Length: 413
Image (cartoon, rainbow, N blue to C red; front, side, top):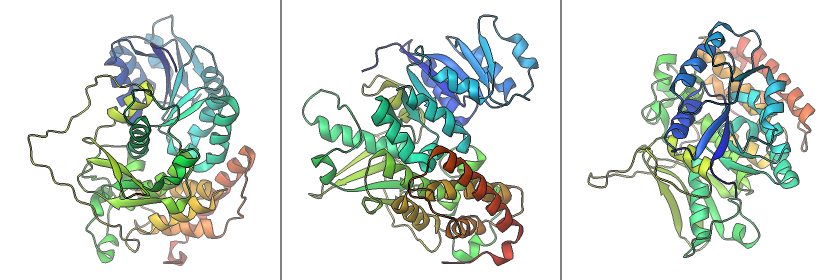
């Protein structure tokens, strides 16, 4: 197990996950210390973050080499500054790095995640797109180089904690891995990911036809970036998490499901073949799964929100409506297919969401674009990294064609 203090590289520190991670580091009483922070181009936000950190990192990386460099003049002289994705990939390989928190948004986070795993690092993965695109590549590198891949998404963190608690039983010995192995996999009947249902949980198909950007960005539970908030509204986030779970826990798509849970207290459940179900509950607060991954397999006091058991609690669960939220069956299909399917859906969705946010695409056409692009792509069951990057580029270009001729997008399969 990694010793403490642990030196953390935070990739994508300016995003919502990155900012919550820095809070966790500040509150860790020196157990978790930053060694590297990266942002794409938000150098002004980076400067403010450095001013609030209790311990400064050794390195910072600006991945966009055209970013405004003027705020960097105010940095302490002992911080080394690098530019570009190649520099980031080189730094995460260095022996000084213990844990890489991968939170770069979108497919841009894939190469640095792969670099860390090639170096045998522990990667706390918030960038779900890496696993959705290249699940076989990432898990293969873990097996080859002896690193570890830990989830930061609250749903997969919940599954990991449920499996860890089940294996530990009455002992206090930490389990070595969160992925099912051998007989353990046969004991699992289903992983059940929970979804809040987003802002349109009760909307009819007719009402969804007139959804505005403002409507879609008004999430009832979580405060997140625009892209993930739209994904939550379409339930594409849950579709991507289904694909992610297939790789994280090495289970077939048939053993992965989802339910609508408006209270967002139960983050996921594991059902076993004997009918027992283990669930992880906590208020919606991303600092908890972040802390869980960075401290794995140990637990320490934290400042994330706690359930107030003095108050009445209601837990509701509803089966998802695949007609109103067609992203879910699309995710199950891609999880079952593997190969390039996840990369295509991820790329097409990023383009379609951008088109919706810019007012160029109706809300309901986001998933239709993804379905259309997936249906016309050349499937590769065992893609290499160059093939994944090529299919990512193709899918984005193809999605652009569909968004420009949206009247002809198929309404259904």
